Length: 197
Image (cartoon, one colour):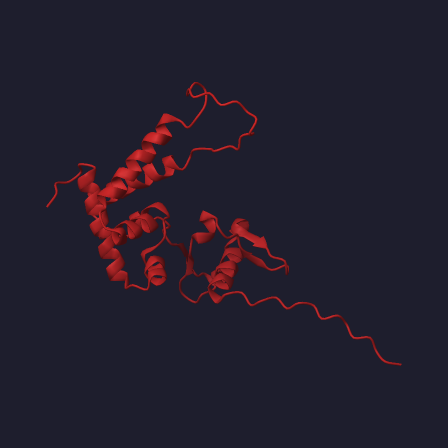
């Protein structure tokens, strides 16, 4: 009498080494609020969240249970890059603030049968959101070159690290840092924080 073969269960793909390390450290420290279970029952980082983007580092022997120190890397690149001047930082923060404010417009779908009035009374997008959008667009035009604008938008608005942007663009970190600084200088001149050269 032949034996029945068990149905083969799908194998879980291997977790990336960096993610597995971050999951291990967070579980040991008790910061498992940024973890979720995947379809295979494994703990993974909740992608797309600010908490999941933080990088935990362990010093000494690599084990938190035996006295290793856990450090959380600074998420905000504007504060993490120590070679930026005060004006560059302030210009970047103002540019980010305009970007974030301009993204707050809540657009809701409308029925085709709904009557639309041409006036603004009680409806439409708030003036503060429109003004922030205009300010952000004017500042982006002041950046001049699209290479500079792309780096500034990725680092300042999307809060990506210089290392990540350099890897994605296939450039050296020093090139990305230089483009960022040029862009922040242009923004600082645009905002009147420093004189043009």
